[in-house]
Image (tube, rainbow, N blue to C red):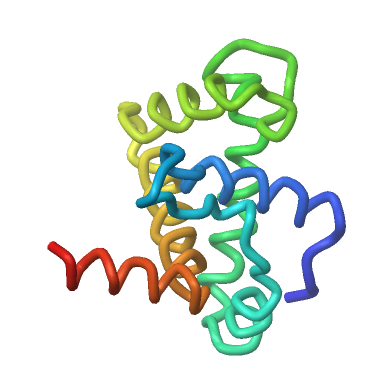
Length: 133
């Protein structure tokens, strides 16, 4: 499967950023996924993930990018929605009746978590929180 086109990367990154936003300001603040350099994660995923996973991710990005047209009835794509509408769309899709739509959100969320914890700084912050708990 060919690499991501620039517009697909923008769609993918907007979707992933919506999955893990920055936590509340303060001492225990964690960065949002949009603040991380995910270049290494995408290189590893493209090199090692099975073709079906890579295809499923791309299909999920495309379908969720166009979901506002069907789910919210708004003539905008996911990346152009304000943060609160993105969150509302993802919540609605995650709780929707169609299994496929729920699974798209779950798959993207799982990969977003892997991308997030791929970052060494995030891992160390999470580990420090776990030790303190």
